[in-house]
Image 1: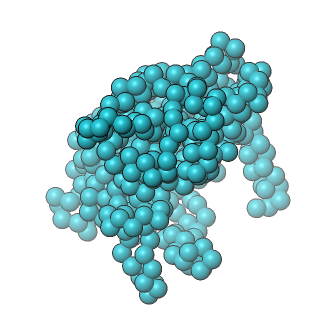
Image 2: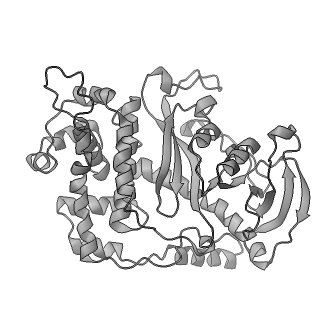
Image 3: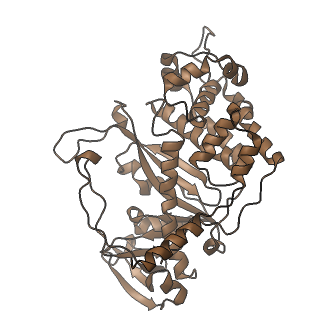
Length: 433
């Protein structure tokens, strides 16, 4: 049976009023962005540019941090308010200048702001099962951000269902740092997931030593695993149900592993159907975990067509190079991978990245950088995983609609999520499910 993935090892310490004063850092972001002011002004020979790079980023942050602002036109109206102009030092802008100005900015310069904020990160706490796991636990996946952009670089090929429709989107590849619940690295590509935009190739470009990468079966490529090992990292990766392997050593699951649903634990030689140079060049371990069977089926027209996912025979096959980690921890690590799916939902629906303020690559990259900055600021302010209510309460506090005591009371509430989920599991057991 799965353990709860959202229960930290220990409750975070209560926040005090002195901690809450960090909320003022939201207004000090302008100081961190000041070095961007002259970027993109080389072509401004007349010297009449009014919307600068730092102003642009502040406006995007204002949009992301305030759930009441849901469009560029609303952002324009908010920027005209005297109090907003006074606090942020921004001027009124036109929709045309906002859309076109990002073309001359260099989004990569925001990396400096990200690094400055990352220095003040506070751990949100690991699950007790992961407390002894060495290195940085990193969840890897990508998501598609749809847009109405007509740029050829962001265009899908016609769908195979015969409708001839086109979809326009970008693919966001992201590494989620579990210890701090913030993006550790990311890259924006076209959405096709082939060639340079293939998730495996993007991961190769981002590999770092000391990371344990947790991945889904799309990353099940033996040469990629070799590259991870060569870079000084480790991996936990699901493989396909039809993977070919030879068992070298059986490791009977103990009671803790059996209770976690582990069926078998084996040291294997995997990839026997591949050429020798395409196989894993290091010892690999296969942990099989019982799960609910799944049959591939269509989603239907109302959900945009497509498939629900590959068929599963009721067994999760997880390969790792961590030979000494308990089998129940390996099983739990793969379940923990779903945390990045929840983070994608937070990024899109709560921070507003589902709606792109710009359809140009530079504008999309700036918005993603701004979303990462929001996550870093929420971590340094609260020291816990960001939620929809955390963002909303921070916005209400900055607007003067919530007091400091309101924020402290919310942030100091105990996290009983795991207790409730375990009680629900026990109830289902009593009912025979």
